[in-house]
Image (cartoon, rainbow, N blue to C red; front, side):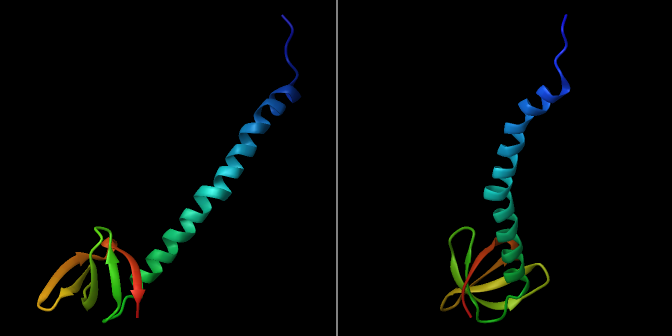
Amino acid sequence: MPTQPAGNALIQMFPFVVVFFIFYFLVIRPQNKQQKELEARRKNLQKDDEVITSSGIHGVVTLIKDKTVVLRVDEKVKIEFEKEAIISVVKK
């Protein structure tokens, strides 16, 4: 039975390596960058920032605790959310 040369196996793996690098640069790397930016925005939240939660609720930050944030969503309505629920800071 003839054996295949080692170079042939490398040539067959080349398309998989190329696809992995394309996937990494088009999907994984931008997603990691976006996640780091979101974490930085959450860390730098300040009172009176307008934010949007993951459930689509718009509110104004009134109190910041260690792991939670209290948002004013209407005149006398305040809701407490986890900081991870904040997905966007609209204005400062």
